[in-house]
Amino acid sequence: MHDGSGRIVVQNLSKQFGAVNAVQNLSFTVEPGSVTGFLGPNGAGKTTTLRMLLGLVTPTSGMATINGRPHSQLGNPARVVGSVLENEGFHPGRTARNHLRVYAAAIGVPDRRADEVLGLVGLGSAADRKAGGFSLGMRQRLALATALLGDPQVLVLDEPTNGLDPEGILWLRNFLRSYAREQRRTVLVSSHLLNEVEQLIDQVVIISQGVTRYYGPLEQLRKSQQSRVLVQPADPSALVKALQDNGITGVSPTPDGRVAVAGSSVQQIGDIAAKAGIAVYGMQEEHADLERMFFQLTQGQYTGGAPGYPPHQAQYQGPPPGYPPQQHYQQGPPSGPQQQQQYWGGPQQ
Image (cartoon, rainbow, N blue to C red; front, side, top):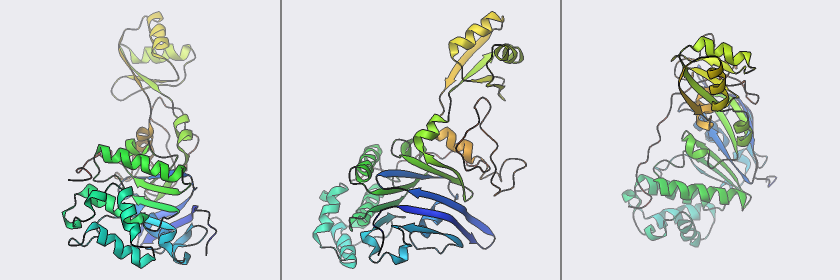
């Protein structure tokens, strides 16, 4: 039926809807024992990609496999892959337990599994409550319980933290880490809540406009970044020259009149400025993080791309002033406005 590996492979995957290139030539692999973040702004092509992986949308070209097979060839797919693409598929008058028993019967697992997964997701005390009265966070947990019914090798989750309060997010993070690492399962998580996902994932796929911008280990992405110091000098041009004369090359002015300096410390910059007789009114050290890198890679999606870059051409214009060139990118025009994290209520109300 399948190779039993628990591996997800996306290879040269593309999807066109009329004149719209929703996904273009995506390739990445998700290995068991790890949590992979699938990141991109809204409209980047994440959900379309997941739907192709789960057999809900037919690719225009390329392929997506689980255990070496397309979803349609998995036999009893619910025993191989569990997924949550939305959390609205509940009859409002049916209790959580009865909802799960219906799905359990459909995939051939015993009724007792319903209570087991309710306990796993923290809804044991709500088993006899009707789903129509659940908060958004509780519906998210019930959707995850449904995905877990078949004890699958693979979990595919689209925006799984939506509706969870901070305690629920911490619980989900710990649960998915344990599921992947201790049980050697494969977890693919799509999200735009970057500061949360950064604490969960082992590797990351970043896309925008349907194109891969980065694919690789999260630690490698972190190592490719440097902190920088933003300096407010009396004479920016004089400070740039003084720094360069002292062998500091990662220097450039910023639009607000400051000077961005990479690869140097506050103390070193201060000493050079003092020696050159340049007054400095303030210095601020910035540490690049996954969220900064995400926006750097995806900053053109809602503006049609940076000047000179056609919408879907695979180019990348480089990091902001003061940051060294990055080495590990599937290059493309940056895109995407900052998304605001929202919490919609607790897990049980």
